[in-house]
Length: 81
Image 1 (cartoon, rainbow, N blue to C red):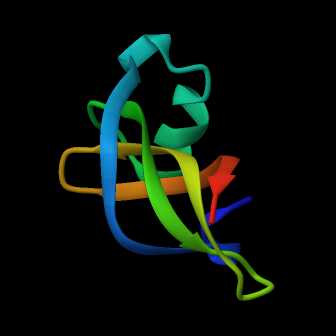
Image 2 (spheres, helix red, strand yellow):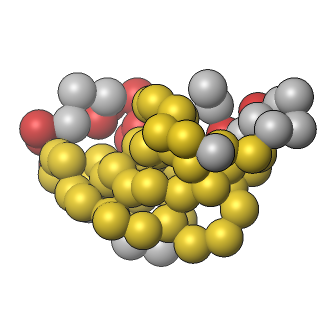
């Protein structure tokens, strides 16, 4: 699920870095779409509102670089309500 389909509610917790720089598979796509930078792929736990208006606790993944903020947020799995 992409960011335009999901709303993050509240704070993201248990944030971990998954990959940095050239170890990111989508680095070329990220740089073409959002510009160059020191890209990192991260994961965390957050409450999300899905398109059907249900609220769940989910593991989310996203990319960020200094000065660009969170990009390409995806719900990887639903953990509970």
